[in-house]
Length: 299
Image (cartoon, rainbow, N blue to C red; front, top):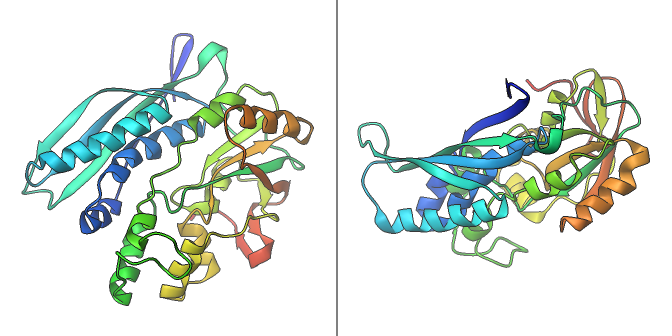
């Protein structure tokens, strides 16, 4: 964040990462186009900023008009969902640097009507942690995912056990965009912390305030795609919860007396699946009692 006179602006930058390699393998590009928006505007939402503009970057080894068109369609969907304006961007053909395609962006947000940034410093023991579900893996952990798929020789055209669509399609599900939900409740005086559970998983809560304990004792049922991936690599719960979102993509820390008000605000914004997933206690780090997990910090 940067202060300019009486205004505060928020800036963030991120890439879709190695999810683009899966998109290339499956031959689907619209989802990662939408991810370009989601991975950035959700980070703006993590301080209560409203997205206003985005500039994107596409680095590639050769011009690919059909792929660019598909990315553009997904990018447009994400911008409408945010909502956010695309001011421009850069497409560079750099075969000496990139083999394939790399996607990223920088996003700008602001704090409307004198809204103060939500920093997490006001969080206290007794506060409630509310979780909003994810759409799947979003855009994190795909280096590990691809290794698991390759090692197990997974057919991306077939559904996983219990799945309804090809696993390649399920894994490419775009990042859920939380900005409208956050914008609806960010001015509520009971909102004390906001966290985008992306890379780092539940450990991202520690960034809000390191001298309290986030006890996630009502974690929702973990979606089947995460358990399927876990079975491919025989991975521990510790590794899963610090790599993936495990079904919860965004968290809101709320003063208990304002919980009902915040939930009503989320419903008015169209978010009907937000549920309390835990509380704040004295201590440090993040605890998920159901799985006997404790993270003392982010590292």
